[in-house]
Image (tube, rainbow, N blue to C red; front, side):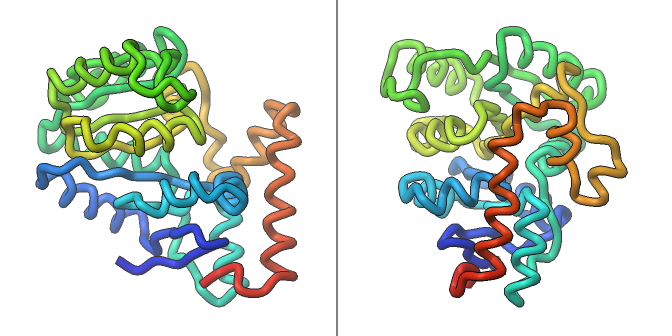
Length: 251
């Protein structure tokens, strides 16, 4: 699988369809495979945090979820094929699961979000076997409580039902930390850190209108809806300045 590095963070150079085909292969294997979907904000955070960078670099599939990554890679003559968002890949995974009858466990969101997401998933994808769900507000390794009884209880619950697919929507960097800390003791085939995907699937949040998606301006839509995100969104112009005026940032 072809990939590039942005600030030493690996990003796989694949299309959404290619990513879906890789996931299909993962689902035929027995060892749990990890999927991370870094956007521009995550790349900038990983630039200054080696632990996070190492976690993502160790992923089995790392997709470019950020229009800034696409533009930056083109400017540096290492063009990524296309943006592959965590949400879009999650939907592809649900389509695969529906076609093949795979099982799914949902972990994340506020109390009730995973349950509502699961109910909506089953309505749209009736062949998926929803084997469990749990909210994301528990004490675990993602917040410095390694092997806490709440975490161990959730892991036991997941391993009892042995899901083919696990959605871990704990938000960055908690989901990445949690997946990495527990990947060797989870019984499953694929786990994806997919942030706010469950909020959208539950109906608690809306994705940006299609016109914003096509133009790569979902970040602007979210900023309009939530002006308090301005500090977070400032990483995008900062990223582009690094791309334009620094050497050896993309390999």
